[in-house]
Length: 132
Image 1 (tube, rainbow, N blue to C red):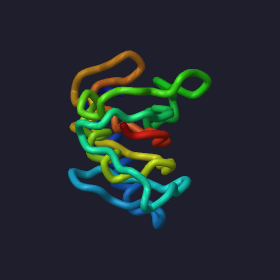
Image 2 (spheres, helix red, strand yellow):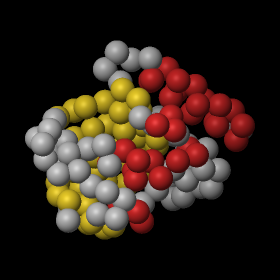
Image 3 (cartoon, rainbow, N blue to C red):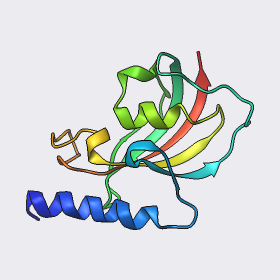
């Protein structure tokens, strides 16, 4: 598939996903589906928070490109991550597990990463374990 076709296929996939009844929207074209709800009164991170989370990242064809499952959870400052994570995780509470759909512009944009072609919509299953 040509680069332009790939980018368009990713945009179209996100448009279709956004129409599903259990998919909710956030700002800047990020969408998500709640898998498990944590405590609605639980802590929420700010961009400067240190978060602890388990995650699995996939492209729209289902190919897994990264995962913390089976190992130690990710622990880092939220502001050090891609913009899509920064926006979405600030809406989550500790204990929430969401599947998040991030448009390419809020992920890696037109730049390829290992296992992620440029222009990819990113799908992350994220479980927020802690906020410091």
